[in-house]
Image (cartoon, rainbow, N blue to C red; front, side):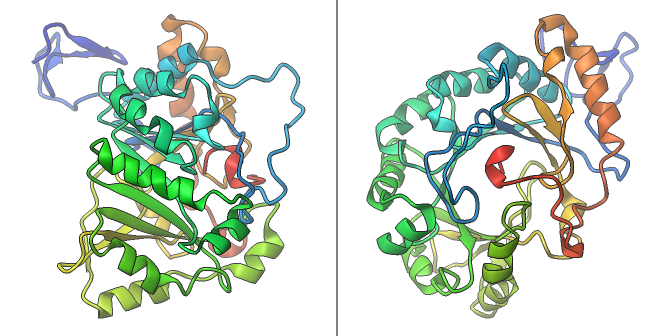
Length: 356
């Protein structure tokens, strides 16, 4: 029981479900929900769109500043306010993304700020891993509970070809360091690309045989700047799923604040396999996540729209009610699907622009 009632919207709560002043049984809190009854427990918070890698499927020519006048990324106070508003409306998981989020000099302080927010149970990040060996211990101490690292090949030469950086061994050292400092599992993201890495499943399976790694194969997604690459390299994850099932892998049940991966386990493997297949029918039915860009815009979908400005409501602590109201109003416009299967890649120029 909390010592004092906490206000969510217009109601106050003592415990998990007792409402003041009438003490009636009711819902835990105001909850972000759209017109299709999807509830949103998961916030993907971008803190920068800058990245130091040049991945072929995202920033093949490297990061280019946007040229925006008076542009700056969300500061710690703005981050604290937006995360608190989401947590007060049911969000229990926050993933800190980029670009490459660890490029922020205050990245550890960002983790501390998010982790200190009441109601947030999971604080995750997605990183290219090049700074992990040096900094992952301090990230864990600051409150980071989960890590995703992007490794698109276990062949150093192919890794270099895909990422544009010869840092394979540094990234692998970072994963080992994460285990040393106490992480029980590390998730590794692999973007599937035909004729590059899509036939490396045997090598990846051998790698996770005795390691607590959740290997996540992600289908290449079409964005505004990547049409030609998508046509050349897209491959469905269905063949991998069929192979896993035939080999005795079993689908795990998803938790409410889990991401979109279909996760498979096998009694002979310490590691797990996750498949993210956005082109599969019904993919969007389980959507539980919203996105905030590094410039403070709300994005209802990775591929949907230009984003709704929230930053004007992140300047003072007394603006939360208005902030929540604006988010709720925008949520009613969220579409039933991303329509990728119809060939609509939306307004997103590349994945780094709003944090993937």
